[in-house]
Image 1 (tube, rainbow, N blue to C red):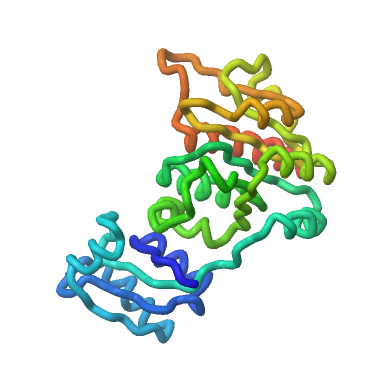
Image 2: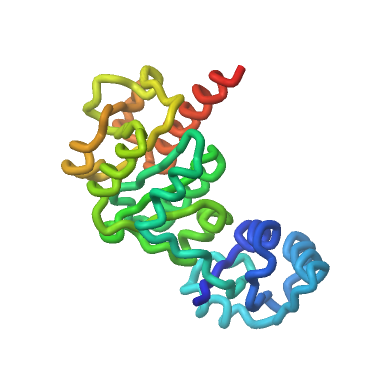
Length: 247
C-alpha cells in the first residue's frame, strides 16, 4: 500500500529518515522558490527522480491541501496491530506512551503526533473509531513524526488501557475538573498520558481506567487550550521531570 505526503517539511523529514520508501515525487513546474529548489537538489542527490507537474494536478491529488509545490507517493509504514503492543512494551525500559481519545480534527492529530515525537514518546495509541484517520493532512501537520513513531489504532481503548496497566504503566488522564495540576503529578516512571478532545475531553470509560487525573492551571480568561497545545504542556512537563531524575 502507498500513502500521499506533501509539503516541504514532510518531504524533507521523509528524505532524512526513509528515502528508500519514496515511490514517486511530484514538483510544481516553473517554480522558482529557493527553498523548493534546494529540496529538489537534495532529492536528486539521493538518487531520486522528480516528475514536474501542474498546480492543478497537485491540488487534485492533495485534496486542495497546502502542498507548497511538492508531493510524494510513499510506501506505507508498518501498520501496528494490537497484538504487537505487549512485545513493544517489553522492549522498552521505561515506556512513555501517549493516548489520544477522540481527536477528530486531522490538524490537531498531526500536531499532537509532532509534539509526541519531539518529546520522546515511544508509542501513540488511538481508538479506531472517533479519531481522525492517518491521512495526508495529518502527516503534513505532523511534519514527518507520523512516520517515526509507532501508532496503534485499537478497537477497544479501555481494554488497551488495562493491558498498559498489566505492564505496570501509570495511566494519567487530563480533565479540567481534576484537583491535581500537571506540575504536581509524578511523571518520571513508566506512564501513559491520556488526552481528550477539546469539546468533550476523555470519555467516561476512559477516565475510569485512569490512575490519576490532572489539569493544566488556567490563569486567564480562556477556559481551555487547543488539544495539541495542552498535549505539549503535559508532555514536556513529563520530559522535565524525567530529565531531572538523570541529573
